[in-house]
Length: 397
Image (cartoon, rainbow, N blue to C red; front, side, top):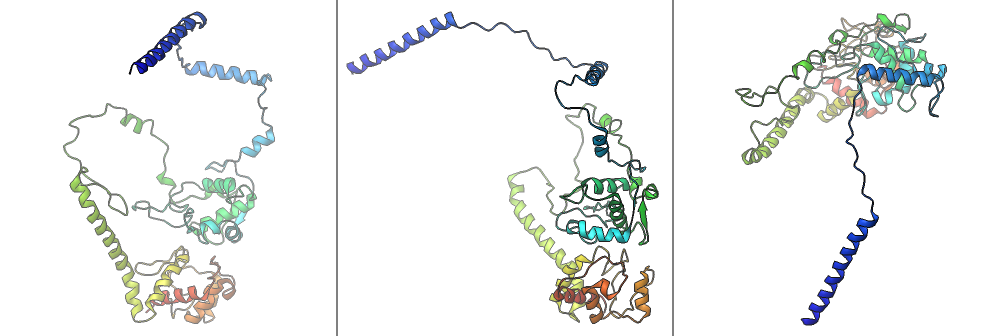
């Protein structure tokens, strides 16, 4: 133990000597930092800031740009200045009809937005959704939500097609925009959009947009002192989250957490029951005729048609006629629907829809009825066609 004490004492003495030397030399050779005045942040009033900006502009005009950049050339400014206002200011000269727009749309847009604007996967929907803005899940499209046609033209011209933006000529943009209007039942099939009639087109939801008044309304409403206690006698749930009921009934507790799992199971069962209830009419109708499994497959394949055609309870004609009772019906004969001359002529020539004629038509619509305005290019395989025919037949008996 005595040897260890002597060793520790030696180490302790050496450490103490080192600290004394460090402090001594530090005081001699380290210059203390001078006392710095406190920095004050000054925000220049608007007139002062404006004067500084004006002075900088004058300096830049004299050529003193600190070696950074150069003034933009008029050609560069013109290339950037491509925005279009709702009144048509900024539009280039040009025109395009619906049939030209259909061909361009199928070639440039349909791979993402679908043949009829119904969208593929999670790409934006462009057509339909009329009357859905008050629903829990509104469908916001050009025909249901957008306020101005200039937004459509400007976006197509500026950013489309995806991956090859600004590759379309003005005439092509006019044609595609016209076709999008047609998909939304805003114009007829003989419509031609141009810089001359552009400002005359009004989208259905324009009147529901208004100037931003948040500075006068919301800002004033939320600028008052917040209430911190005794603000309201009771809190009432007025709406619930869509799809799954995740709105809590009471504060989180062990009891609520224990009840959450059964509630989720019940919600899942309700969704299954609702799905079964929705599918019941088609299954019941098919039980006496087509194979129920084929009808179910046809319902899925019919989604490619649903952007223009409706079928089932409450079906109405839209871009295309509703297809209830299509079996045995003469082509082009549904009351109240405006058919293309080609369809009317086919009906007058004796065309009646049955399994054979529907199969040939759904395979190649434009070859079967030359001049049809239906944009759909046809199903790619017989199995989808047979399934769709079975699905339609279930609503035709």
